[in-house]
Image 1 (cartoon, rainbow over the protein chains, first blue to last red):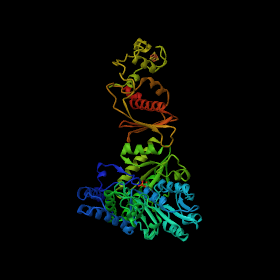
Image 2: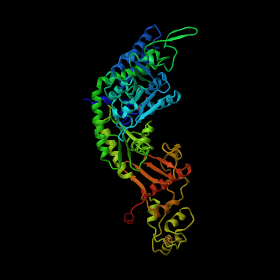
Image 3: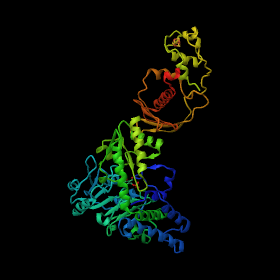
Image 4: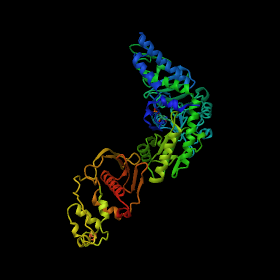
Length: 401
Length: 177
Ligand SMILES: Cc1ncc(COP(=O)(O)O)c(C=O)c1O
Ligand code: SF4
């Protein structure tokens, strides 16, 4: 069980009584993470992988230790973790670094965030590939049989999200990975919305790449991670090369290193990576199962309240067991932005409105080009947060719709 | 402090036109801007009704309220339209605040049905063909889907006037007591 009152004490942002229901966009940062970041700046402010003096050693140790913590979170080896700026950069790194042949096929889905969609559209155009987009049903469900017709011997890569940032639905990654691997294709999983909220095990999923952001998992902004399965780094060219990523350089040649540093040219986001490591540790201490259970309870409460509110259309499944703590909805007669402004101004409830960087989904599946309102929960949200949100929404629906 | 609406309640409400104005409200409006005398009204002139004592000078401010524009931008969902957010500062010196008498008769002749109010949230909403306005008690006013900048500001003022009128209107029975 998660003691939410104890958890909340760690989050200074919550002290003002604000109700934060937008953790899908970015999460809040707890004191232990902030402390770790400051500790680096205060105690061992030096560059990594370079100096021989004590502080530089300490910085390198802290940075590499963060890699160990982040690896633990997803049951990977530290050498399989590459620090990048965010999930978006991780996906772009794979999209531009993977060698394709003309006619290769990429498979993605209609659920994707733009970050796991337009990089594939771009390589499709620049490298003359084929791109198939697997369509979901109205609630966002995807089954392995939806993928089967799209995956064949020409498929190079399947890129799919583990949790939709709009509908909260979770495509069956394990089965999709099996289908893909049977045809010799690689699998990239966008874990931006799953890794922070549930136990993710790359061995169990058997994915080849997993991408996620620090800022969505209680870590600092400016850092993310790319997991590349052992042995596959050879397939991926780095996005940037330069200092820190080379084995040897001569007048007219260079040889890149192997391992994560191949991809981490230049001074990395040291403090941020250390913060991300601390965040991984923080989440593991609380327990991913506990976090998931806590969010499921809040989601159930929220779904129930929304179902009982007049004029609300909920997108995605109505069953809390079938989705993560991300709920998009619309209120009849209201622009989603107006609902968000009304919630914020009258009750201090922060929710997101718009298309949540998933325009294809809004246009083709939800038929809601103006977007939706999205409320999402995380480990620090309470039943009271959900109730204030629901009561305000009910009053908006009653008096203003 | 009596609002202009309180004063209006003491008017005869016959709209007989004797005074040369088309209605009692127009008469009050003209009086407020110095264009008529109360004694132009047949009821006041004859003493049938007591002449209201109004010590009123027209508000010094022209705009209905002091406002600070937070932003003007294309609507996120319909880029050909505009969205504007302003913050209205508390009404200055004039007891009648930003209420603009010029539209008062429009208010009374039109039904205020599309003005939606939630006192508990402190939000008022006015939807129209040319924009959706929300007014918040803390002074924030947001319009979405404004046809263009000019009409968006017009919609904002209209919403504020309607709101002002509604808030200040007293049920007739109450003011008669
Ligand atoms: C599913 C999904 N993928 C990718 C991203 C991109 O994450 P970032 O902006 O941290 O790169 C997001 C962020 O909202 C997301 O929800
Ligand atoms: S004369 Fe008096 S009653 Fe008649 S319209 Fe004018 S103000 Fe009203």
